[in-house]
Image 1 (cartoon, helix red, strand yellow):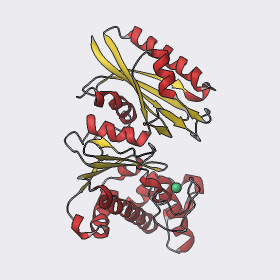
Image 2 (cartoon, protein in one colour):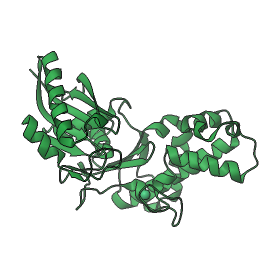
Image 3 (cartoon, rainbow, N blue to C red):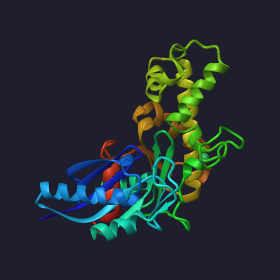
Image 4 (cartoon, protein in one colour):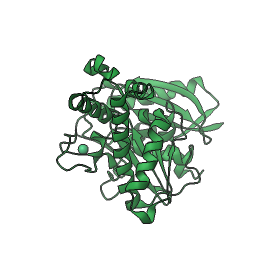
Amino acid sequence: MKEVVAGVDIGGTNTMIGFVDAEGVIHAEGRLSTPEYAFADDFVIGLDTKLKEMLAEHPGLKLIGIGIGAPNANFNKGTIELAPNLRWKGIIPLVKITERRTGLKTRITNDANAAALGEMIFGAAKKVKDFIILTLGTGLGSGIVVDGEVVYGHTGFAGELGHMTVVEGGRVCGCGRRGCLETYASATGLVRTVLALLSDRRDESLLRELKGSEITSRRIAEAAAAGDIIAQEALDQTARMIALGIANSVIFSSPEVIYLFGGLAQAGDAIFVPVRKYADELVQPVFRGTFRVEPSGLPEAQAAILGASALIWKDAGI
Ligand SMILES: [Zn+2]
């Protein structure tokens, strides 16, 4: 029998499930519609049924545990707490409910910490003890690893670098404060920067022909590659903000590598070259040259499931 862990990625729309072995190979995949379940208890029953179906279809597999990545998840307490994108309100003891229903060891963490674990167990950080991963999507998530362990802190919510204040009194953030890093250094932040530049500047730009909702980070990257000055300036400002976040984080935990993951990281050299340059310029001189900024080693489509399963595989000591 091949031992596998169920990696479960709970999103607002879909819950993706994969049976992952110790080498990071996915042997079976499944999906649940998250909003179909009004209550977390019903969801866990649905998950249990799905896992049994998947096992029945793959008789050679033995399930040894369940790792869950979810928004607003608390590793220390095994809970999902006040997640705005889920129907389940309040504080949900998901680990307890799942272990009781399935009889399997279950662990939970938030998406960005799962990405960090995935990087450590299956990705580019297998031999790296101190690193930070920044997930550059709609927002900016982060996982901080110190001496081979994810930093959770006293509350279980540590390491949310997206909500470091980088501009006091700056842009309004979804967390209710102003000037957080993610309001600048994310796909959404990049679009906000373009809109600000378009209204401040008179330069011609391909982006002026688009409606507001058509201005996406992909379009901006394409326009920059085609020589568009506004798009290039916006990418440069975004890179500088990512670098400022990195420079502050390096002073905090002295990582060997900072991995960039997600949509914006796909822009390749257009983002990595200026981020590296500015990070070197902005960091305290004693740290200059002590860290690298690299792309994640995980395939984007599988990273969430691999990362969630790594919660269990890490304890298994692989
Ligand atoms: Zn914030």
